[in-house]
Image 1 (cartoon, rainbow, N blue to C red):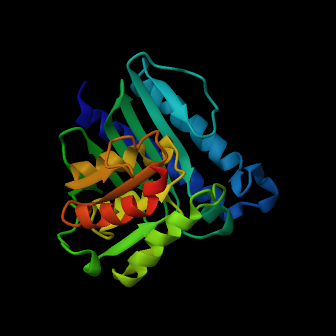
Image 2: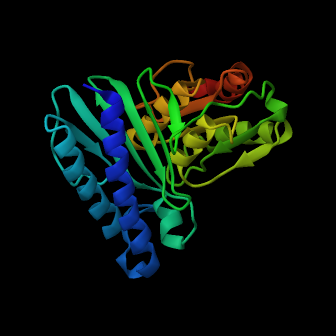
Length: 266
């Protein structure tokens, strides 16, 4: 399999799906909103975009299966499975806030080998394939060279339904407020990870995420020279619902801050 060519072909169809999402935002009505759970919203835009992605990716790799957020398809691949979030940042989309992405990763058995994040509003396509480096709109990207937490700009995502670890989460938030250039909350984990990969953020942490939120981003970050782990320092960040991602230079300091805060639960 030529991963570079597959990545290039996938980027084209993902950007085409992004054009559909962009167009629908112009006429979107809140009457189209459905609620999957507390603060967990979806609409026909998410579902249609997912169907488009599945249909088009299946043509690229007919033997593949899918792990998707909206569960519009039930196909499991023996070796290859696409992990798809058709609209990461649905709440932003609904409110007209311009930060939402398509996130697509390809998993070979248990390993992510290709990742693409398309930030629709800025028309920025971030992508990487295994051992191929990381790119944004055909330009090579890398994590930042900032080497101290105190000089770092960090990102996080506020828990919106699972408040079990709020005390621990806020302990990290509090520490970083005093010991960094600040924290940002964009409302899209995919965008957060893409921005770590290209050096806009030095680090990112969050809990309660799903595989489709992070699968593409973790490969892009690592191929850009960054480090990713769970809150224990291990590699259970795709399905483990917790993640720390940052440049390699601040990893130890940033990870220890997160680990200590969550120690009683990890």
